[in-house]
Image 1: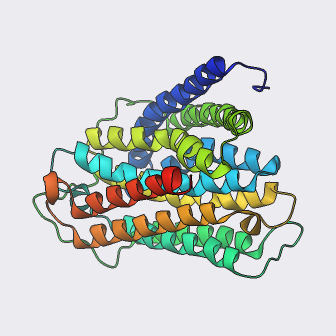
Image 2: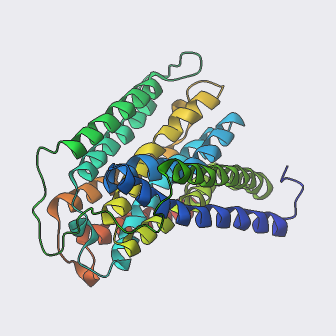
Length: 344
Protein backbone atom coordinates (compact mmCIF):
# COMPACT_ATOMS: atom_id res chain seq x y z
CA UNK A 1 0.00 0.00 0.00
CA UNK A 2 2.90 2.35 0.75
CA UNK A 3 4.96 1.33 -2.29
CA UNK A 4 3.32 4.00 -4.45
CA UNK A 5 4.33 6.85 -2.13
CA UNK A 6 7.26 9.09 -2.90
CA UNK A 7 10.27 8.84 -0.60
CA UNK A 8 9.37 12.15 1.06
CA UNK A 9 5.83 11.02 1.84
CA UNK A 10 7.13 7.63 2.97
CA UNK A 11 9.34 9.38 5.53
CA UNK A 12 6.43 11.57 6.66
CA UNK A 13 4.16 8.55 7.14
CA UNK A 14 6.89 6.66 9.02
CA UNK A 15 7.53 9.60 11.34
CA UNK A 16 3.79 10.00 11.89
CA UNK A 17 3.42 6.34 12.85
CA UNK A 18 6.44 6.59 15.15
CA UNK A 19 4.93 9.66 16.82
CA UNK A 20 1.69 7.80 17.50
CA UNK A 21 3.65 4.96 19.07
CA UNK A 22 5.65 7.34 21.28
CA UNK A 23 2.68 9.44 22.43
CA UNK A 24 0.59 6.36 23.15
CA UNK A 25 3.40 4.82 25.14
CA UNK A 26 3.72 7.91 27.38
CA UNK A 27 0.13 7.57 28.54
CA UNK A 28 0.42 3.78 28.68
CA UNK A 29 3.27 4.11 31.20
CA UNK A 30 1.13 6.18 33.55
CA UNK A 31 -1.77 3.72 33.26
CA UNK A 32 0.54 0.74 33.81
CA UNK A 33 1.82 2.34 37.02
CA UNK A 34 -1.80 2.82 38.15
CA UNK A 35 -2.65 -0.80 37.32
CA UNK A 36 0.44 -1.95 39.24
CA UNK A 37 -0.70 -0.04 42.34
CA UNK A 38 -4.42 -0.87 42.15
CA UNK A 39 -3.93 -4.60 41.57
CA UNK A 40 -0.95 -4.88 43.96
CA UNK A 41 0.92 -6.49 41.09
CA UNK A 42 4.01 -4.43 41.83
CA UNK A 43 6.01 -2.22 39.50
CA UNK A 44 8.60 -4.83 38.53
CA UNK A 45 6.00 -7.44 37.53
CA UNK A 46 3.76 -4.84 35.86
CA UNK A 47 6.75 -3.52 33.93
CA UNK A 48 7.74 -7.01 32.82
CA UNK A 49 4.29 -8.35 31.94
CA UNK A 50 1.89 -5.47 31.23
CA UNK A 51 4.04 -2.59 30.02
CA UNK A 52 6.75 -4.74 28.45
CA UNK A 53 4.29 -6.69 26.32
CA UNK A 54 2.23 -3.62 25.38
CA UNK A 55 5.13 -1.51 24.16
CA UNK A 56 6.45 -4.50 22.19
CA UNK A 57 3.32 -4.86 20.05
CA UNK A 58 4.53 -2.57 17.27
CA UNK A 59 7.71 -4.62 16.98
CA UNK A 60 5.73 -7.88 16.86
CA UNK A 61 3.73 -6.57 13.93
CA UNK A 62 6.95 -5.67 12.08
CA UNK A 63 8.54 -9.10 12.56
CA UNK A 64 5.37 -11.05 11.74
CA UNK A 65 4.67 -8.96 8.65
CA UNK A 66 8.26 -9.40 7.42
CA UNK A 67 8.17 -13.17 8.05
CA UNK A 68 4.82 -13.51 6.26
CA UNK A 69 6.35 -11.78 3.22
CA UNK A 70 9.28 -14.25 3.32
CA UNK A 71 12.02 -11.91 4.56
CA UNK A 72 13.47 -13.95 7.46
CA UNK A 73 16.44 -11.66 8.05
CA UNK A 74 14.23 -8.58 8.36
CA UNK A 75 11.97 -10.38 10.87
CA UNK A 76 14.81 -11.73 13.04
CA UNK A 77 17.01 -8.63 12.99
CA UNK A 78 14.05 -6.46 13.95
CA UNK A 79 13.47 -8.66 17.01
CA UNK A 80 17.03 -9.02 18.25
CA UNK A 81 18.07 -5.51 17.21
CA UNK A 82 15.26 -4.17 19.35
CA UNK A 83 16.56 -6.09 22.36
CA UNK A 84 20.01 -4.52 21.98
CA UNK A 85 18.53 -1.03 21.49
CA UNK A 86 16.23 -1.31 24.49
CA UNK A 87 19.07 -2.48 26.74
CA UNK A 88 20.96 0.61 25.61
CA UNK A 89 17.97 2.69 26.73
CA UNK A 90 18.61 1.64 30.34
CA UNK A 91 22.07 3.18 30.06
CA UNK A 92 20.49 6.38 28.72
CA UNK A 93 17.97 6.31 31.60
CA UNK A 94 20.91 5.98 33.99
CA UNK A 95 22.28 9.20 32.53
CA UNK A 96 18.85 10.84 32.89
CA UNK A 97 18.35 9.75 36.51
CA UNK A 98 19.52 12.47 38.90
CA UNK A 99 20.28 10.10 41.75
CA UNK A 100 22.99 7.43 42.04
CA UNK A 101 23.28 4.49 39.66
CA UNK A 102 19.81 3.49 38.42
CA UNK A 103 20.49 -0.24 38.76
CA UNK A 104 21.47 0.35 42.39
CA UNK A 105 18.38 2.40 43.24
CA UNK A 106 15.94 0.04 41.48
CA UNK A 107 17.03 -3.11 43.32
CA UNK A 108 14.29 -5.74 42.91
CA UNK A 109 14.59 -9.57 42.92
CA UNK A 110 11.95 -9.92 40.19
CA UNK A 111 14.09 -7.86 37.80
CA UNK A 112 17.11 -10.06 38.50
CA UNK A 113 15.11 -13.18 37.75
CA UNK A 114 13.66 -11.70 34.57
CA UNK A 115 17.19 -10.90 33.38
CA UNK A 116 18.25 -14.50 33.95
CA UNK A 117 15.20 -15.63 31.95
CA UNK A 118 16.14 -13.25 29.13
CA UNK A 119 19.63 -14.76 28.90
CA UNK A 120 18.05 -18.19 28.58
CA UNK A 121 15.57 -17.02 25.95
CA UNK A 122 18.38 -15.50 23.87
CA UNK A 123 20.39 -18.71 24.16
CA UNK A 124 17.60 -20.91 22.78
CA UNK A 125 17.42 -19.26 19.31
CA UNK A 126 21.23 -19.38 19.05
CA UNK A 127 21.12 -23.11 19.81
CA UNK A 128 18.32 -23.54 17.23
CA UNK A 129 20.32 -21.70 14.57
CA UNK A 130 23.40 -23.85 15.26
CA UNK A 131 21.47 -27.12 15.54
CA UNK A 132 19.83 -29.35 12.92
CA UNK A 133 17.50 -27.73 10.40
CA UNK A 134 14.14 -29.11 11.48
CA UNK A 135 10.57 -27.91 11.52
CA UNK A 136 7.18 -29.47 12.14
CA UNK A 137 4.44 -27.80 10.11
CA UNK A 138 6.97 -25.03 9.52
CA UNK A 139 7.62 -24.44 13.25
CA UNK A 140 10.92 -25.22 14.98
CA UNK A 141 10.72 -27.08 18.36
CA UNK A 142 12.64 -24.21 19.97
CA UNK A 143 9.63 -21.94 19.40
CA UNK A 144 7.39 -24.29 21.39
CA UNK A 145 9.95 -24.50 24.20
CA UNK A 146 10.20 -20.69 24.33
CA UNK A 147 6.44 -20.26 24.75
CA UNK A 148 6.25 -22.84 27.54
CA UNK A 149 9.31 -21.38 29.26
CA UNK A 150 7.89 -17.84 29.02
CA UNK A 151 4.60 -18.82 30.65
CA UNK A 152 6.44 -20.71 33.41
CA UNK A 153 8.85 -17.81 33.87
CA UNK A 154 6.06 -15.26 34.35
CA UNK A 155 4.49 -17.54 36.97
CA UNK A 156 7.78 -17.84 38.83
CA UNK A 157 8.33 -14.07 38.63
CA UNK A 158 4.93 -13.45 40.22
CA UNK A 159 5.68 -15.97 42.94
CA UNK A 160 8.99 -14.26 43.65
CA UNK A 161 7.16 -10.96 43.95
CA UNK A 162 4.54 -12.33 46.37
CA UNK A 163 6.83 -14.61 48.38
CA UNK A 164 10.43 -13.36 48.05
CA UNK A 165 13.09 -15.66 49.49
CA UNK A 166 15.61 -12.83 49.76
CA UNK A 167 15.72 -9.05 49.49
CA UNK A 168 18.40 -6.57 48.39
CA UNK A 169 20.23 -4.58 51.05
CA UNK A 170 18.50 -1.23 51.57
CA UNK A 171 20.65 1.86 51.26
CA UNK A 172 19.90 5.57 51.29
CA UNK A 173 19.79 5.41 47.47
CA UNK A 174 17.30 2.52 47.27
CA UNK A 175 13.85 3.54 46.01
CA UNK A 176 10.89 1.56 47.32
CA UNK A 177 8.00 0.36 45.17
CA UNK A 178 5.23 2.38 46.83
CA UNK A 179 1.77 3.39 45.48
CA UNK A 180 1.51 6.92 44.08
CA UNK A 181 -1.30 9.42 43.87
CA UNK A 182 -2.14 8.43 40.33
CA UNK A 183 -4.69 11.08 39.39
CA UNK A 184 -7.17 8.33 38.48
CA UNK A 185 -8.94 8.31 41.83
CA UNK A 186 -12.49 6.99 41.66
CA UNK A 187 -12.06 5.37 38.27
CA UNK A 188 -12.47 1.57 38.20
CA UNK A 189 -9.52 -0.60 37.20
CA UNK A 190 -11.59 -2.05 34.33
CA UNK A 191 -11.98 1.38 32.74
CA UNK A 192 -8.26 2.08 33.13
CA UNK A 193 -7.46 -1.32 31.57
CA UNK A 194 -9.74 -0.58 28.59
CA UNK A 195 -7.99 2.72 27.94
CA UNK A 196 -4.67 0.91 28.18
CA UNK A 197 -5.89 -1.67 25.64
CA UNK A 198 -6.94 1.11 23.26
CA UNK A 199 -3.46 2.62 23.39
CA UNK A 200 -1.97 -0.82 22.72
CA UNK A 201 -4.18 -1.18 19.62
CA UNK A 202 -2.93 2.17 18.31
CA UNK A 203 0.67 1.07 18.79
CA UNK A 204 -0.01 -2.18 16.93
CA UNK A 205 -1.54 -0.37 13.94
CA UNK A 206 1.38 2.03 13.83
CA UNK A 207 3.75 -0.93 13.92
CA UNK A 208 2.16 -2.30 10.74
CA UNK A 209 2.70 1.06 8.98
CA UNK A 210 6.36 1.10 10.09
CA UNK A 211 6.82 -2.47 8.85
CA UNK A 212 5.44 -1.67 5.41
CA UNK A 213 7.61 1.44 5.18
CA UNK A 214 10.71 -0.59 6.09
CA UNK A 215 9.93 -3.12 3.36
CA UNK A 216 9.66 -0.32 0.80
CA UNK A 217 13.00 1.15 1.90
CA UNK A 218 14.69 -2.27 1.55
CA UNK A 219 13.32 -2.74 -1.97
CA UNK A 220 13.67 0.82 -3.22
CA UNK A 221 17.23 1.49 -2.06
CA UNK A 222 18.66 -2.05 -2.09
CA UNK A 223 19.42 -1.96 1.64
CA UNK A 224 20.20 -5.14 3.56
CA UNK A 225 17.33 -6.52 5.62
CA UNK A 226 19.51 -6.82 8.73
CA UNK A 227 20.53 -3.16 8.50
CA UNK A 228 16.94 -1.91 8.18
CA UNK A 229 15.69 -4.37 10.79
CA UNK A 230 18.37 -3.93 13.47
CA UNK A 231 19.03 -0.20 13.11
CA UNK A 232 15.83 1.02 11.44
CA UNK A 233 12.52 -0.49 12.43
CA UNK A 234 13.94 -2.07 15.61
CA UNK A 235 15.02 1.32 16.95
CA UNK A 236 11.82 3.08 15.82
CA UNK A 237 9.49 0.48 17.33
CA UNK A 238 11.64 0.47 20.48
CA UNK A 239 11.10 4.19 21.06
CA UNK A 240 8.12 3.45 23.35
CA UNK A 241 10.51 1.61 25.69
CA UNK A 242 12.80 4.68 25.77
CA UNK A 243 9.88 7.03 26.41
CA UNK A 244 8.23 4.79 29.01
CA UNK A 245 11.55 4.25 30.79
CA UNK A 246 12.32 7.98 31.02
CA UNK A 247 8.70 8.71 32.02
CA UNK A 248 8.83 6.06 34.75
CA UNK A 249 12.17 7.42 36.03
CA UNK A 250 10.73 10.94 36.15
CA UNK A 251 7.74 9.63 38.15
CA UNK A 252 10.11 7.84 40.53
CA UNK A 253 8.83 4.40 39.46
CA UNK A 254 12.33 2.99 39.09
CA UNK A 255 11.35 -0.69 39.35
CA UNK A 256 8.78 -0.10 36.62
CA UNK A 257 11.44 1.55 34.44
CA UNK A 258 13.95 -1.27 34.77
CA UNK A 259 11.28 -3.99 34.73
CA UNK A 260 9.70 -2.52 31.61
CA UNK A 261 12.96 -2.82 29.66
CA UNK A 262 13.89 -6.27 30.93
CA UNK A 263 10.34 -7.59 30.63
CA UNK A 264 9.95 -6.01 27.22
CA UNK A 265 13.17 -7.66 26.06
CA UNK A 266 12.04 -11.02 27.44
CA UNK A 267 8.75 -10.66 25.59
CA UNK A 268 10.61 -9.54 22.45
CA UNK A 269 12.26 -12.95 22.19
CA UNK A 270 8.75 -14.23 21.43
CA UNK A 271 8.88 -12.12 18.24
CA UNK A 272 10.93 -15.01 16.91
CA UNK A 273 8.16 -17.46 17.84
CA UNK A 274 5.48 -15.38 16.10
CA UNK A 275 7.77 -14.87 13.10
CA UNK A 276 8.48 -18.63 12.96
CA UNK A 277 4.73 -19.27 12.82
CA UNK A 278 4.27 -16.68 10.07
CA UNK A 279 7.27 -17.83 8.00
CA UNK A 280 6.06 -20.58 5.68
CA UNK A 281 9.34 -21.74 4.10
CA UNK A 282 10.55 -23.81 7.06
CA UNK A 283 12.27 -22.79 10.28
CA UNK A 284 12.99 -19.07 10.46
CA UNK A 285 16.06 -19.75 12.61
CA UNK A 286 17.82 -21.47 9.72
CA UNK A 287 16.60 -18.94 7.17
CA UNK A 288 18.22 -16.09 9.10
CA UNK A 289 21.81 -15.09 8.39
CA UNK A 290 25.08 -14.42 10.20
CA UNK A 291 24.23 -10.72 10.56
CA UNK A 292 21.13 -11.63 12.56
CA UNK A 293 23.14 -13.99 14.76
CA UNK A 294 25.59 -11.14 15.36
CA UNK A 295 22.82 -8.91 16.76
CA UNK A 296 21.49 -11.79 18.86
CA UNK A 297 24.94 -12.22 20.42
CA UNK A 298 25.17 -8.45 20.94
CA UNK A 299 21.88 -8.43 22.85
CA UNK A 300 23.04 -11.40 24.91
CA UNK A 301 26.33 -9.72 25.83
CA UNK A 302 24.59 -6.48 26.82
CA UNK A 303 22.13 -8.44 28.96
CA UNK A 304 24.98 -10.20 30.79
CA UNK A 305 26.55 -6.80 31.51
CA UNK A 306 23.18 -5.51 32.78
CA UNK A 307 22.78 -8.52 35.09
CA UNK A 308 26.25 -7.91 36.51
CA UNK A 309 25.27 -4.29 37.20
CA UNK A 310 22.04 -5.31 38.92
CA UNK A 311 23.95 -7.71 41.17
CA UNK A 312 26.93 -5.44 41.96
CA UNK A 313 24.72 -2.36 42.58
CA UNK A 314 27.49 0.15 42.06
CA UNK A 315 26.52 3.52 43.57
CA UNK A 316 28.33 5.72 41.06
CA UNK A 317 30.62 5.12 38.12
CA UNK A 318 32.33 7.16 35.41
CA UNK A 319 30.48 10.40 34.61
CA UNK A 320 27.98 9.69 37.45
CA UNK A 321 26.55 6.62 35.74
CA UNK A 322 27.15 2.97 36.49
CA UNK A 323 30.10 1.20 34.95
CA UNK A 324 27.69 -1.31 33.38
CA UNK A 325 25.96 1.55 31.56
CA UNK A 326 29.28 2.70 30.09
CA UNK A 327 30.03 -0.84 28.93
CA UNK A 328 26.59 -1.27 27.36
CA UNK A 329 27.01 1.97 25.42
CA UNK A 330 30.43 0.86 24.17
CA UNK A 331 29.17 -2.58 23.12
CA UNK A 332 26.21 -1.12 21.22
CA UNK A 333 28.34 1.55 19.53
CA UNK A 334 30.80 -1.15 18.43
CA UNK A 335 27.98 -3.30 17.04
CA UNK A 336 26.55 -0.36 15.08
CA UNK A 337 30.00 0.40 13.67
CA UNK A 338 30.40 -3.21 12.55
CA UNK A 339 26.94 -3.24 10.93
CA UNK A 340 27.42 0.02 9.04
CA UNK A 341 31.08 0.08 8.10
CA UNK A 342 32.75 -3.30 8.54
CA UNK A 343 30.03 -5.12 6.59
CA UNK A 344 30.01 -2.50 3.87
